[in-house]
Length: 346
Ligand code: SAH
Image: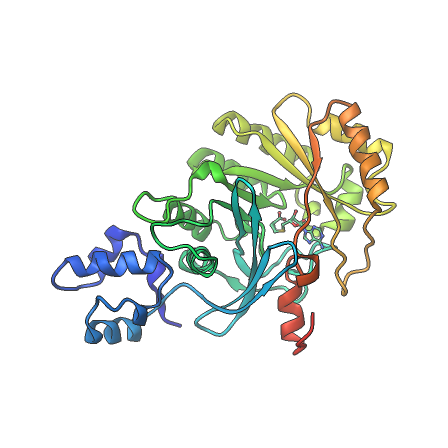
């Protein structure tokens, strides 16, 4: 596999790609930040472009784009070694969010998630994560100067804290002033709760918003849903969450997918009150997206509203997350699954 040009900051690019005159490096960098391929950066001489193409891949390619009736878009990306994975673009009144993948497949194998079926294929490098942002920004009409993507959530396929170094490098590149410059305040990293790396991120930065996929209020239920819970108890996750808040000043977001007869009774509400007490936090309730290969059932709208009311009556800050792209396989890993199975429909 070729090295990826988007792994390099402007300084690193200047040091490792020899081009003369030296302003050519700047032209290259600006073209890349606009989401262009090497061949599309026509200010560069053809010989230079041929040279670069032999040595480098550029981020990832978009091999398919599906648009939902709600305005969200699902992208299927393809890597230089012909792996496919996906991401979602969600338009909001106040800006637009891109959901970024950090791995192809995932090792965590959560009971409700399509990404873990088949295990981890490989980590994505920083340039392949940045590539998703730059290509999607261009695909929705943005350019290097005209940024259409304002917010990022690391909630695509993969576990970001299981690919720590590449993710941190990506966060630095995507928030850098000479790049697309998405503010760290507008970036959320979602994790199943790898506490050592939560603490490491708290110590070393960058300071992004931390979302923790909780999904259960007892260790027993959480172990049923998320095998990784045998390594990390809820108590240890709360400890790491508080540490993250103390170090960064950022409130903690808990993600909580509501599952019928599993995690939404009044005792769960009471335990969530205890879990979130004493430090700034918010619970994002998620309507479970049913995944064909997984047998869990989501709850009804009225059950969801009842659980929300229980929480807010207890003083817990909580909202039900708006769901996007149900008609275009919005949930993690679904589109990849159907394409790997060779299916044209969803
Ligand atoms: N590995 C990271 C990020 C990827 S998943 C994590 O665990 O947080 C992003 C969020 O979507 C997680 O909260 C995950 O639990 C949730 N999720 C995955 N599959 C889902 C489904 N079918 N329905 C609802 N939420 C789902």
